[in-house]
Image 1: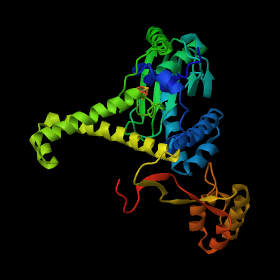
Image 2: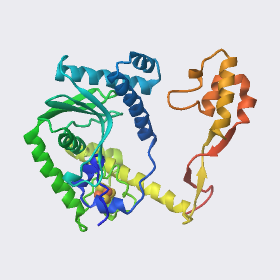
Image 3: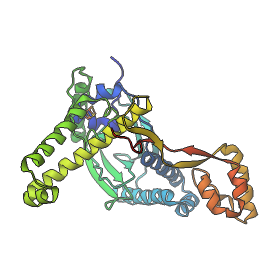
Image 4: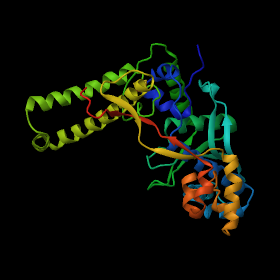
Length: 372
Ligand code: SF4
């Protein structure tokens, strides 16, 4: 059998829908979203801070504090980590810091290792922290954190771990829970059972658009997701037909509980309809016609023709304007063409020679006057 694609970060999906192992292994992973790329940049700042903090280099922390939003969020997470660590270990405990640590997990059934954001290891106890961006409330005892704790337990053989979620954008930026060896032993059994279930080639697919399906790469090809979406749409439409009421009349007539149920159904329907729309656009991009519609791009993005050629020009313009390099180089990337045009309005002609226009994603749009 092929290696499992299950890893700590998708284990919850595997637990709730064991068949997702089979379905996701048939499709390519989608490109990472803008939110995921932002999370990666915040992680990169955080990693630098953990490494610099362990070597007591306050200059790095200061520079990031004066940086952009992403580096400031990383500083906040670093400060929260330091505070939690100090409270947990005490000032005199000797600890070692491990950042972006890869640890094996094959002893518990995974075919892939765990990647821990940070582990702080004392003589008897350890601390595992995972940095999250956004505001969705992650639990310190999620399946992902359970897997990390097991990997750390195997690696350092300590009596227990404090599991910490650092989420600087959330209204609860620190969430933590201590687990001892007996809890970890129970988790080991649970994780192994869940991974065994995934290995079954006939494992059931269990859809829930708001939970396990939300980030599943198989949404577009999974029949269970499609039929679940249809099931959600049909009863709601039938109810409306039967009552023969307008929408305003309908929502005012039903009970408060029914309104809550309808709202949930509406959220699920809209998630499913978004996916349906994406699949129709994908089919049209492959050449399958949609009568009365055509693929159109509504926006044109400005991109550097060749960033290597643009960088010396940006540096030269910054110097001429009496600005330092930081004005044209953000912590992890150079200014975009749009930002450069705004910063150097008198140099438009010179900059435009370095810029190409790239049409944004194509969308299906009604052809004017068409009657599908
Ligand atoms: S789309 Fe949903 S039901 Fe289908 S495999 Fe993914 S998680 Fe399971």
